[in-house]
Image 1 (tube, rainbow, N blue to C red):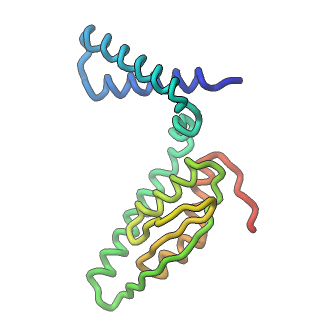
Image 2: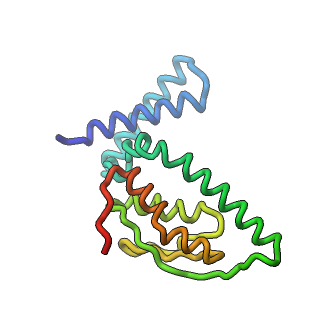
Image 3: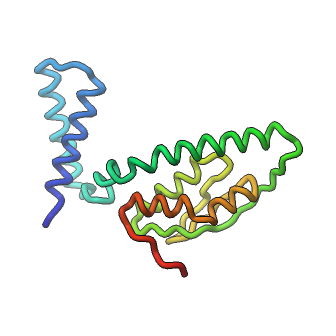
Length: 167
């Protein structure tokens, strides 16, 4: 089954909903302009070939639902840790660059994983090469946490994939 018409329809609905949500105006002229604008955007996107499961991952809205609250908690915990390290001279700051495996099979999954690492204070993803991420960390605790694979497993699960066997 070709999913392009489904992706087009879902993208069109999402764009129209965003237009109406952000404008807050429901006058006939504005709704007509919204529909025309969405149709033009869909036509251009289709001609450019950017409507597929990678560029418009509709599945992500549902599968990543439980992931975002978990990531938010991790961001808060990391923020507190970084603040404690900065404010307390006794706490070690030992910057290090290391590599970690990414088990996601799609580009979108690896990007979400890399960006999740960067969103977490005290760590920054420097480079992504295939299924390896180069990460800069503020402390050894951050390295140990990432090497435990918890974030990687959660992103892979949010993608709807089974975990890869260990190498």
